[in-house]
Amino acid sequence: MAEINSSSPYAHNPQNVTGVMLAVVYALIPATLAYVWLFGPGVLLNIGIAAVFALSAEATILAWRGAPVRPALSDGSALVTALLLGLALPPLSPWWLTTVGILFAIIIAKQLYGGLGFNPFNPAMVGYVALLISFPVEMTTWLAPESLRSGELGFGAMLSYVFTGNLPVGLTLDSITAATPLDEMKTQLSLGQTVNEIRSASPLFAQFGGTGWQVINGLFLLGGLWLLARRVITWHAPVGLLGMLFLLAGFFHFFDAGQYPGPVFHIASGGVLLGAFFIATDPTSGATSNKGRLVFGAGAGALIYLIRTFGGFPDAVAFSVLLMNMAAPTIDYYTQPRVYGHIRKD
Image 1: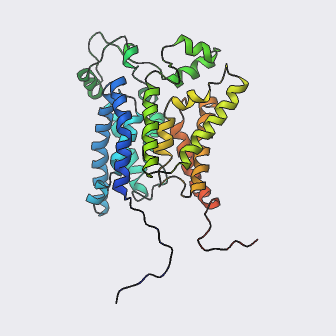
Image 2: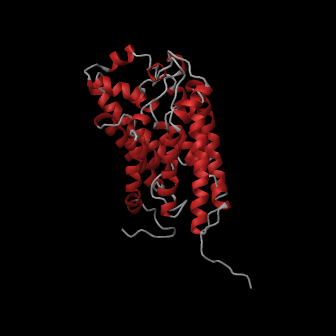
Image 3: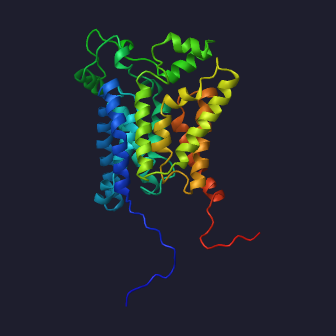
């Protein structure tokens, strides 16, 4: 006799984990290609190294635990973690830096808690923050956009630097690296300059954000909108994050435009759009209800602005997301949707 489930309602979700992960990868391809075009192929080295060690670490831990290896490797989650971390790291990151970061992300932040679906923190952001705290010099050595470099760095030279730490004779780091727009803005504001003076004096700044970076961020936005159109993610966390960041930045800019950059600069610079559409929307480490996702995103947006403006880190996306990961269980508790069929008693 066949077993009949009589409880209802039932909800059908045609998406599976592999499909979702592949959609995220597809959505990141345009921004990744623009990254290579504007800053060179170093980001591909980051992603490649991270992917190799992510899959190796995941397979090793699963085999050690006696868990099935192939299903976990084929779901794409380790590759997405590698892709996100690779995009977040400077293009000239030494191979060991990328390796340490991805091993920390996979082993400590993911598998230590039981694997996919059990991790309370976003693994890529845990790996990123661990590196930023432990190796601040390497994590702040960013390539200048190709149009602003005083020296040329080909793929072979970049490959040599990543694996050996050596640059070609006559080429120095100072000739090919530069501060990020967010770092430059924060530093110069602390020295008493105004926003307009900083933007007009440095070629690092473009119309909306940083030179080169505003193009990449525009493509992160395009990829995020595609995920929304495909219903891979919902709008709640991105709108909450971007909306709160826009409101706070707009409020301070309105009262003192000389000391506080406008909201468009904050959104078009750094990792905000990557964070809004690809990190804050993580279904495992974020809030679960739509209302909760909105609160989660708004909290992350507020923290990004506060840390950028009054804290010690120019970007702050990773710290903000991880802090909200800690708050996610409480957010879920207070934003539980009404049970289907339940009649509210007034």
